[in-house]
Length: 326
Image (cartoon, rainbow, N blue to C red; front, side):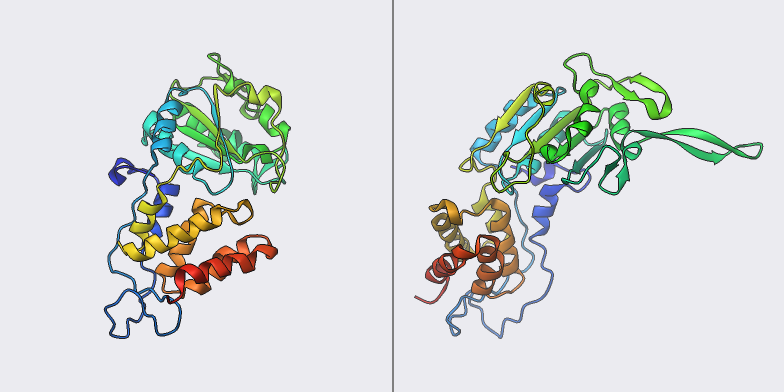
């Protein structure tokens, strides 16, 4: 979702992961053919073009949204939308522009089983701070204060992304209240007896979440949490952030015919809400094809089975219409 991939040179982020989709992981036998499509089997078999480079491009909607989000810095901002649409990617890109890469950048995904005492396999103090025993110069052991992940970003003026925020219980959110306060930010670290820990003026906390209810195991955000975001953007399913055609062109090495077939296939699926697939799934499909998998096998295992079982036949039928011999 970048206009120029050279803009981001920091720690690998999700846009880097999308770019990595273009990496050729295995050689596919070409059987001496120079054609991009082998039609002898009744299905398209793609022969990859060597040394392709994937491009990550923003749609015009995403570019406009990025500009609006930048106005939020350094106050918290929330991006809500369906899974797989590129929320995390766009927030990482905007965060890099706002705070730069040298000050640090981290994000944490939050599963439903989080409790007050644990983030993933970490204790809360791994994110905040802890007193760690260290050997004393004269012998014995002394305690030394060590800052956790969030605290290091708070001190350095980096960015911390709280992904899938509404999957975590409200007890976790309440720990962030002071850090999210409008114009009076502070960071309390009782673990090391530091209260009102100074917050760097460039520190930025942002969050993403999926809609409440429906197919998502999410919770409604507490009003006290929601009210601390200076901006909340709720994305609609039709608001594509990623220029999918440009990304597919990068993944598939400029194979225009195949890119167009995939885009038409995806468009047909999106005409029916029950068979709609997200941008991430589109990239996954192209990646399997890039690795030499038969197109219809990729459609079946990657797309059809990602939807409700009653939609599998419809997806495979649509795939056959677009990808088998005419």
